[in-house]
Image (cartoon, rainbow, N blue to C red):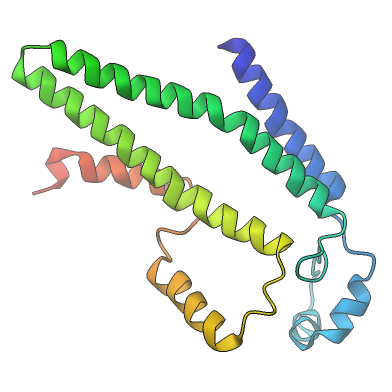
Length: 182
């Protein structure tokens, strides 16, 4: 377990270093800022705009995105395996238990695992995939009449769910607590 935790922490730390190293402006960032009207408006308000590149061409940052994807592919299997193993053990052990209250507690724990897994997919993996995918894939050929309703639905309907906010996971435990359901 210590070795696995050390490997995972080393990968995560390497991603932080990689983001610092590869997270720099595109070579043509000044030219892109002059061409795009919206970016000119942002720069006129003051501050700094960090531009990885035009849509579909994150010049330097694409290497960090590739390293992040490889890290996720390395980190995900142990987490998925241990979660699935724990869920299987809960289900098997609850079938052998004769006490009704213990079976109910095991079922509740199994449901909490399922809610956590679903929450991780909905609140973390889906938004992260959309965000990183839109950096690599150029979405400008999609017509505005199709893209506008999709943005509206994603931003307004799923505004609370589709966020990369860790505090969302706590809500599941609050909803699962019997005393808060009255």
